[in-house]
Each structure stands twice: as C-alpha cells, then as structure tokens.
Image (cartoon, rainbow, N blue to C red; front, side, top):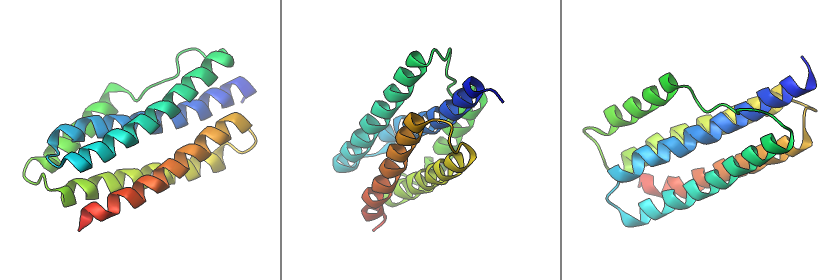
Length: 147
C-alpha cells in the first residue's frame, strides 16, 4: 500500500474512533439527570472534539480528501443500542457502565490501530497516544458513577 493510502487508513481509524465517542456522549447526555455527570461528559466531549479537530487539520496539511466519519449504519446501530439500553434504566450506574464498555472498546481499538500502523506517521501516533490517554482518564472518571 502506498504511504498516502496508509496515512488515510490510519487517520480514518483514529477519526472514526473519536466520532464514535462523540456520538455516544451526544446520544447519552440528554438521558442523564445528574448535572455533575452531565458536566463530566460535556468535558470529555470537548476533549474528543479537540482531537477530532487535530485529525481534520492533519488531513488538510497532508491533502487527504474527505476523512470518513462512521457510516450511517454504524451511527444508527449505536443510537439504537444506546436508546434500547437506556429505555428502562437511566440510572447513573447503568449509563456509566455503558460508557465504560464503550470507552474501553475505544481504548482497545487504539492499541490495535497503533500496532497495525507502526511507522506510518509520528504525528498520527501522537494523536492516537493523546486519544489513549483521554480514554484512560475517562475510565477513571466514570468508575465513581458505578457506586
């Protein structure tokens, strides 16, 4: 595969991971009654959005056209999964559990993406490292909502 294709593939993997987190938070925040929990998630969302912007700036600098968001099927699947799961249980504990599962999946995806794209781009490695650190911090921030 050509370097530009590898860059695009790596960038898309990171970008889609971030977009999944942002969509999850946007879908879940309206279901939360606890203002502290809402603030925590809004803060997390802001950090994901900053990483999203870094990806977009990287794409522009590298002249990568049209980085890809998740497809409509993935978005619909995520939305329906969140809505079905919170239909009968909107407690902080349940929502935190859902978010923790998603965040941990996002973290695992980061680890796999990093292994799959060794030596492709130091700049993307840095964005991915920042995403992994954010995921770790979010896990720690969500755990207290389980109790």
